[in-house]
Amino acid sequence: EAGVAQSPRYKIIEKRQSVAFWCNPISGHATLYWYQQILGQGPKLLIQFQNNGVVDDSQLPKDRFSAERLKGVDSTLKIQPAKLEDSAVYLCASSFYPGLAGANTGELFFGEGSRLTVL
Amino acid sequence: AQTVTQSQPEMSVQEAETVTLSCTYDTSESDYYLFWYKQPPSRQMILVIRQEAYKQQNATENRFSVNFQKAAKSFSLKISDSQLGDAAMYFCAYRRGSAGKSTFGDGTTLTVKP
Image (cartoon, rainbow over all chains, first blue to last red; front, top):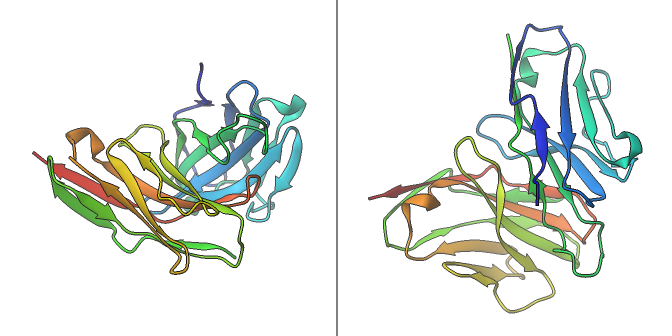
């Protein structure tokens, strides 16, 4: 079974530039998450999608971050304009639809992450 | 808001020995799940073990087991017979219900000495 795919793995940009990250979840996973992991810290949820609808984006800095999940499959996270403090690893994760019979309830499946450096 | 605290930024263990990683959480919910995830250097995060709050029995997965103290809101991970491949960052995570967001602690870096 293919895992969660993310690209690019690494990105270096100047502040005020824009960047986009792409994620393709595990086939059949209805829920998709974007997390920000700053060095030395745990992942922090930016946005959670259920199919193509937003469930939680309370911690997404909406003045510069945006995310979409068209057709309820893959997703794109965009930062525009980037700030120095956006340097982090952006993790995408997916999970089964909650309550689905036989699902591993609550487990998140992560991609390898996209490491962003803002200079 | 739920919070997860891992008070040990770094731990080390001798190969074949046992180590325990600590985690405490704060919640007023009764339906929740607790997890330990492992993040090896430059590799993806994977699930180590999961505990449902309604279960009194502590979860076990091979060499990994947890000590779930619901009243104390404590959820520690014990790794027995530590192996070099266990070296990684370990994150404790809390999830409200089966559909809520997962909140992570700041992690514990585990070093395994040969």
